[in-house]
Structure formats: C-alpha cells, structure tokens
Image 1: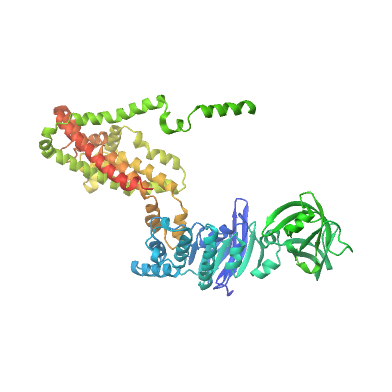
Image 2 (image 1 turned 45 degrees about the vertical axis):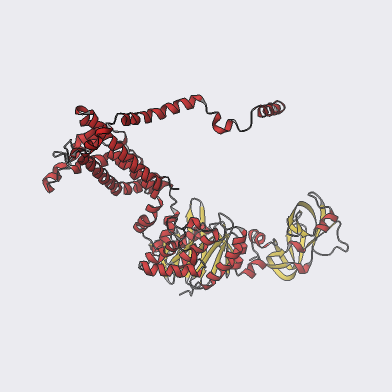
Length: 354
Length: 282
C-alpha cells in the first residue's frame, strides 16, 4: 500500500477543460488545493466527493477504489466515507441545526436517539450547543459555517472536504473562524482536502499546499517552501514576491536581454530568481560605481500598499518595488518617470527551475 | 443635444411637486377603470348570491339530508382525488423536472391536456377507457369485478383527471426552482436517492407542493362536467355539490342558492386557512 489514506489521480475532461491532478493525503494530514478561480479546484473536490465522475485516473481511499473508470468502478457519493463542507454550507433550510447535524448519522444507520445525541455532541464541540434548535436562516454566517463543519464531521468521514470554507464570511468573523477551523482540522483523524483561492487560509490551515492552475499542479510543498520558492507568477503574486526565470551560469542569471542578475547561489541551467518588492531600491540616477543588479526602468503605476507605496516598474523585466512614501516624494514617482532600480545580491534567492 | 436636454429636465423637475407622481396619485384611468370593472365582475356574482340567500329558511334547508350527503361526498371525493394526484402527480412532476428523456416536451404537453380539454370530453374519454366496455374497464370488470363508472370511485377518477395537471405544473415548477445542490449535500451525508427525495427534496418544495395540492383540491371540489359524464348523478353515491346545485336549479332555485352558498363558504374557508399557513410562507 502507499501509506496514504487518500490516493488519487483526478482526471476530469469536460468541454475543453481538462483537470489532471495527482493527490495523496495521509491520515491526519491537511492538504490545500490552492489556485485561481476556474483552475478546477472545485471540480477536483466534487470528484473526490463522488458528485463528479472521473474520466480517467483513480480515487482510492484506504486501499479501496472509489472511482476508477478503467475498471468501471464508481462508488456513489452516498456510499463514500466523505464529509463535505460546501462553500455556502447548504444547510437544509427546513431542519434546525441539530437535525442538520443528525442527518448524516441517521443515514448511516444510527437510530433517532443515537443520531441526536451525536449531533448534540458535535454542536457542543463547535461551540454551538445553545443554537441546536435554530434554523439555518437564524444563524450568523460564522455559526452556519460551524454547523456545516459539525454536519460533515458527524459521519466520521475518512476524507473531509472543504470548499472555500471561509469565503462567505466577513473579514472579522473569518479571523475567529479560521483559528477555530484550524483546531478542528488538526483534530480530524482522517485525510482533509481544502479548496481555497485565499493563500492565507491555505497557509494557516494546511500542512501541505498543492497549487493548481488551469487544471494542473504547478507547485506542491509545505508552506515554507512554497512561500520561499514560488514557481509560477500566480504563486509569486500570492506570496508577494518578484519572480523571474532565466538561464543561470555560476552566480549569474540572465533574466532578460541586457539584464544579468547576480545571486548568492551557484547554479547552472534554467533557474528562478525571487526577491521581495521591499528589496528593490529606486534611484534618480545610475548608482555610482555601477554595482550589480541595477537597471534602468520606467514607472508604470503607483499604489498604496500597507504603509508603503508599491511601484510597478517596466523595463527589461516587470518588477514591483515597495518604497516608503518619503522616498516616493523625493523621487517624484509618477507614471512614465524614468528611474534606476537596484536589488542587493543577498536579497535575491535563486533556485533551479528544472 | 446636452445643452438643450439639461435645462429641460431641470424645469420639469421643478414644476412637478416631488414624489406626487410616485405615490399612486397618478394611476392612469385607462388602467384603473378596467381594474375596478374586473374586480366588480369577480365579486358581484358572489354578492348576488349572498343577497338572494333565503336566510330565514336557511337552517331547515341545511338540515335536509340530501344537502349534507352531497357536501360529505364532495369533500370526501375532492380529498381522495387530491391524494391520488399527490401519489401519482408528484413523481410525474419529478420525472418531468429532473430526468432528461426523449419526448419530454411532448409528455409535458400531454400532461396539460386535461387543463384545456372541456371536462365533458374528459368524462367521455374516461368512459371509453374505464367504462365497462372500455380499454381497461372491461379487463378490470372481468378480472377483478371492479366497475368504475357511476361509482364514488368513478367520481374520484373524474376529479383527479381534471385536477392533476394543476398539481403537476405547480410541483414541477417548484422542483425546477429548487437548488439541486441540497440534494448533493444529502448524498454526501449518506442519503440514497429515495431518502434524499423524501427528506430533502419534498420539504424543499413544500410551499409549491402545498400550493399545487390546494389548487388541485379546489379544482376537484368544483368539478362538474367530467363527473356527471363519467360517474352520473346518483344522490349519496356520485352526486357531488356542483351536481346537486345544477339539479336543484331546475326545480328549486332557493335550494340551489343554499347549496352554492355552502360550496362557496367551504372553499373560501379552507383556501384561506391553507393560504395563510403555507402558500404565502416565504
């Protein structure tokens, strides 16, 4: 056996869109599928839940095939050991919180009393013991989210699936709910797959990130690796880094015509170089002594970014630079302005692209 | 253009008192007049009925055995017909709303035929199928000794035939409007198709279902043409209120008025009661 509770290769072809995502999740592990809208994350989740049949590949849970088109195996959703927290929760509007949570245990063969007792227990665990009699319409967004979580967990699923679990909440509720969700996910003994387009949700909640773009995995790894070594523009934007690809030779990477960046690492061949926007310094004139990693650029746009200003630069490469407002005032940064950009060698990080 | 448009709009705004147009003061006569006429047209006959009711002899007339028998039969058959329609019509509506099959549009059209068919024609058609020499009626008679025409069961059949489209249309619309993702959520919680249907789908379309059942019941209660054709007019067995009204009209107008009044009161009370409870619920 693979040692993974969930072992899947999710291949779904549908009207010109192709999803092809290999996914392995160990028991107790939380994996986030992170990607922009339309990347196929929700399709992946629906396939795992049994709501969307695979066209190829397989889904195996604890060694048992759930969906494997080449062997004509398909276990329908109601017979899979999954729990799903849907994006807008989909709590049954005609049932109160308690009966919503008891619904799953009832369908799994528990009698009414046992199911209710288990539901009371789960509601207490998510801190909603006192709201058991309320209908979904009477619950706040955060409460509904917790009921949905309790409902999904109450069937003790081998695989817990969450589709944008925090997207429907306002910023404040989100913060509290995120912390609490983290606690529950950490306690879940099964495999957890979380779909989100919010990097913060993914970084906080997941042990491992799988980044999906246009139906394919573009990067995979723990939070530290992904944030330090992005491999696509999307990931770089998510984690707030400048990312460029080029050819490396020793300490140099040629990222564009006429721009050779010096990096601390020694590399050969295709490589990425990443640096923070705040590592980019701007100057009126070419810095004296022509130090490495300087190039002429044109200001394309200026926006507020936290306490600083984020300056988008055109030139041999497109780069974002964060400068304090005072610097921006001295340099009189307006679109079209010509400046010199500089990045310290030690501020860059290079890694192979292969 | 803009130079002209601007001052014109300003002067129009300043001349007209603000809000006066919006608060109903400006309902056009061309709409108001036919609307009031329409209202009068719908309510005057009911007022006429009340005006001509022989209030002094009402208690005795109500106590007449035929009246109560007809009322009881009407309520019984309309309710049984509604149950029959629910039993057959809800699955049919589900099929039309949820299953893609060839000829679905044709089937949907067929379902609505009894809506536009003159009820008498419906009664004749029922006779041709369920009559003692009909397509199915003959077999029913010979095999099980069951006869439908001119029986109380026949009344239920005639009423259900005419009333079922109301239910099917209402429920199908509700099913189409219901969010199917709730059914997916039920599936992920371990509910099979049938459990999902009974525990999630039906409650979700509850208001539509109730509205359809009420319409269906009201139509069944007022049914006349198909009933008299298929089930005849036997007091205590197939003579429902509308039939009794029609019959009484030829001999005793006051009796007809009393019967009509009862029918009116019963329908209004029941419909109003149900409407408040279910139909107007959000």
